[in-house]
Amino acid sequence: MSHEWQPDFEKLVDEHQSMVFSLAYRTTGDRGLAEEIAQDVFLELDRNLGKIESSEHALYWLRRVTMSRSADALRRQRVRGINLWVEMDENHGAQFEPRSSSLSARLEGLLATLPSPQRAALVLRYQEGLTPDEIAAALDSPLATVKSNLQRGLKLLRAKAESHLKEYIRGI
Amino acid sequence: MEFEPKDQLERELEQSMVRLPAPPGLKRKIMARRQAREAERKHHRVVFWQRLAASVLVCGAAGGAVTWHNVQERRKGEEARQQVMVALRIAGRALDQMNVQLAAHDNGK
Image (cartoon, rainbow over all chains, first blue to last red; front, side):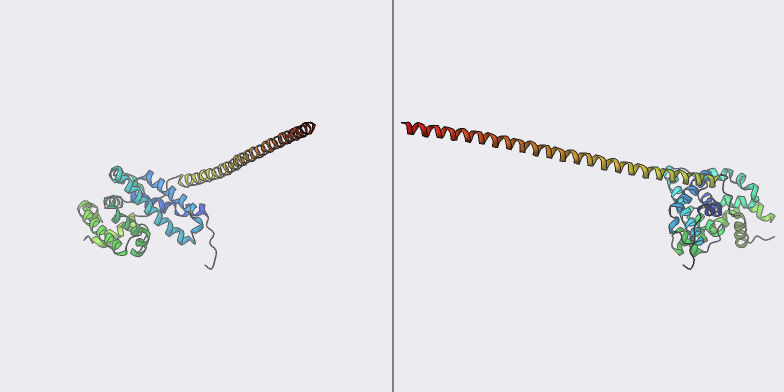
């Protein structure tokens, strides 16, 4: 490394809390759980701060750990038989309405109904703007699986949008 | 207007999936938990050293007691040996005197 990067934990929290929370929330569908995951992720970052080499590495590390923690949380909830997305679906529009259009909110609601691997890939693709290679690295999945999840997710979402959002789409 | 599923859907997804603002107080909670964990770690460190010091103290006391006991045993053994030696010396002297008396008695005959 040409220059020494000095990690500042507080600054990292400031910079990335929105990203970490959004990823966790869109993956789990539970605000409280997402906040808990975000806290755990940052505390884990604090424990591993010595291993972080640059701000890009920190961002990559945070995305990766957030997705992994969120998947674990979803798995645990599934074992307990709780479907968080049912609750989110019911008040999703209300939660997102103040900052986004109705179509966006309903589209996000539809995204929430996708299977979790497809949802995770789409969230990283459209929220974070990652390439399939970067998504594969963040999810620790083979590239072919990620590409397939992206394609299937989009196809499913398109089908759902065509049947559920016609009145909005016609209005555009 | 014709609906173009792919472009429109993906554009709409990009627009709708902006990062959400973090809940108010998230940073404060993270910093508080971090501070609490640090305090707990310090407390654990203090407890660890206290336990280590107590263990060393107990081991030292036990070792000292064993050593003291051994020294006492050795001292008692030495005293007993000395007493036996004195007793043997006295018995030997008594036997010598008896021998002298017996020899005088035999000569007198």
